[in-house]
Image (tube, rainbow, N blue to C red):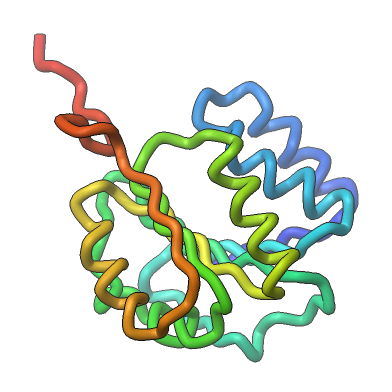
Length: 159
């Protein structure tokens, strides 16, 4: 599943749907930036999705999001598009913690400044593997991780 977000009615509906979700504040930053024509955003939501940078069409600064924190996160080697997305990027954010709007604004700034930002949403266990995959590229990279002693996603206590 690959989604490219563009201004219009469907984008406005997506903004409305994510506005009230506790985990939607960060992604909503991306949607508002698309609506304001500050960036384009393509979200790759399945590890077997067929995607290459040739699929990008927008002349705007671009964020490619790899959505890998839905409870079954994987190493980058398990994502068909990981190496081409990493090679394409001029900067990267590895996001292994809860969604905060400021984290997503950093990706917008990175894309605006350098043209291409890879934003990887993953769990805290897979952050090191993503860092190891991106590090040899030598591009500016931020990582957001939980405070010491905590993990993402947070595990609910058993009753």
